Amino acid sequence: MKKRKTPNLVTIAILTTITVVFWVFFSVYRVFTDEPSFNVPAEILEPVSPTLDTSLIDKI
Image (cartoon, rainbow, N blue to C red; front, side, top):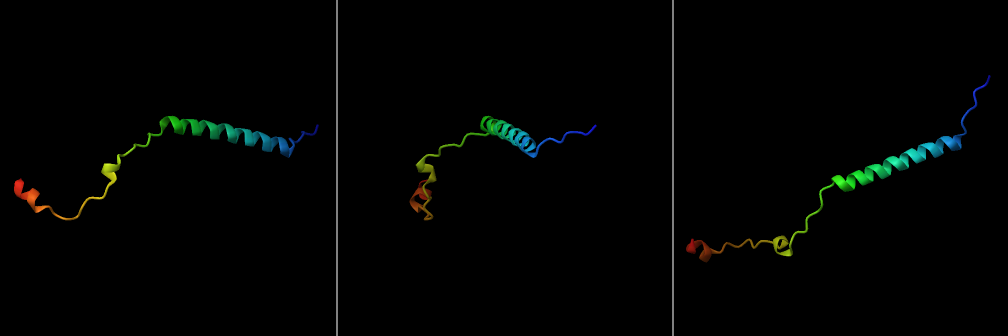
């Protein structure tokens, strides 16, 4: 008796479905395990002045 070969379209459909399921699973997993990004205030992000304030050092 001959074995019937699965059509190529069915094989591609099954592999595509498996890929989509894994893709969705790992996307949901990444959303729940990823650390949230922090909002840094603008005052902290401002550049620091490179000049030395000697009057402030004298007060210390």
